[in-house]
Amino acid sequence: MGDLIVVHPDFDGVWPFAADHFHALWPDAELIRPAHGNDRPVGEVVADAGHSDLAGSVTRLATLGMAVTVECLRKFGALEEATFQAAYGRGLDEACGTYLAEAGVAVYDHPSEGFWSQSVAEFGLALTLCGLRRIPQLHREIIDGLAPWDYEPPSGQGTPGARGQQFGDDPAFACGTLAGKRLRIVGAGNIASRYASFASMLGADVAAWDPYATEPGFHRAGARRVYHLDQLVSDAEVFAPMVPLTESTHGLVEAGHIDALPRGCLVVLVTRALICDMEAVRRRVLSDELSLAADVWDVEPLPLGDPLLGRHNVVHTPHNAGRTIDANRAWAEKLADQFKPR
Image (cartoon, rainbow, N blue to C red; front, side, top):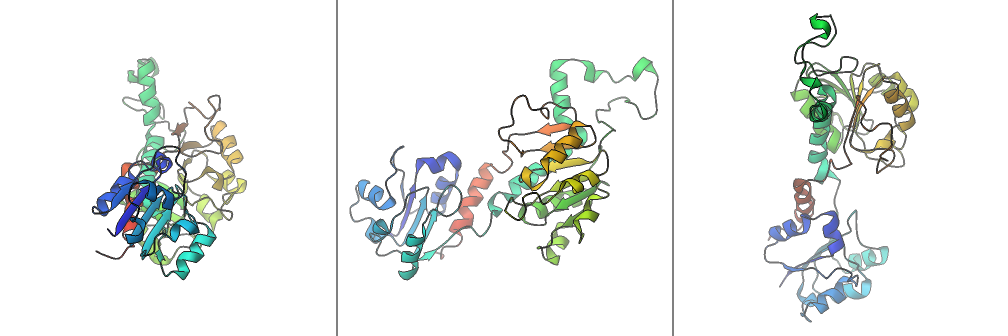
C-alpha cells in the first residue's frame, strides 16, 4: 500500500468535490475520512482506522484539512512525497516542514490560485454582460409586473434616445454589446488574462495595467499594455479591477482613479472589492454616475438594508464566482499533477 488520502469533514465543507476527485486520480489509494468532531492529528486517525501498520507503508500522502504533528509524521517512515493542505493554503507548521525537509520528503503546494481562475473569469464575463444588458433586473421586473413587456414608446410616439420596442438597456450607462466597448482591466494574471481573452474574442477593445506581468501575458490575453494606471481609467466604458487582495494591492485603485472613470462606466468586481476605494465606488454608483456588477463587496454578507441592493444600476451576487465543481476538480488536479508519475 503506497498511497493514502486522509480528509477531514471540515475540508469537505469548503471543497466538497475536491477530495473524491483526488481519490479518482489516485484510484489505488486508501481514503480515510474521520468522523465529524474528530480533530486528532493524522497519525492517530490512521491508527484508529484499524490499520496499525498502515502509516509505515505509505509512500505518497495527501492530508486535506487534517491536523499534523512531528510525532505523527514519524510514523510515516517510508514517506517520499506528500501534500498537506488546509482549506486555504498549506496545513503544516514550521516544525513539521523542517522535519519533512530533513527526512527528504518532497512536499507539494499549490503554485497559485489558478484552480479557480477559469470559474472566476467566466463569472466576470457573465457579470459584464448582465451589467450591460440589465438581464437580472429585467428577470426580476417581469416577475413583479407586465410593464417590461410594454414596448410602445410613451404616448405611442417615438423619441430619439428614449426607449423603443424591445429595448431593455439603460442608455445612461454603458450598455449593448461588449464588442466595441473600451474594456480596461487592472491585472494580467490567472483571472484577468482569461477574462481579457474572452472579451477580446467578443470584439472588445481591451487594455490592461499590471506592472508585474510579462509582455507575452498581454499578447495571450489579447490586451494592449498600458503602463500608467491613471491612463487606464481615463476612457473606460467597462472597468474591471482583477488582482488578488494583498497588503500591496489593498486600496490600489484609489478614489482619484474611481472619480476619473467616465460617467456611465460599468465597474465589474469579481476578485476582492477592497482593492478599490469602495467609498468612492459607492458614492458614484449611488449618484447614478456609474453602474456596478459585483460578486465581491466591502462588507460581506451585504446587509439586507444596504442601499446598493436592488438598484437599477447594480447587478449583485453573493461571492460565489470561484466555487464550481470544475474549480474543485482543478484544485485536486493541480496538486496531484506534481507527484511523480506512477
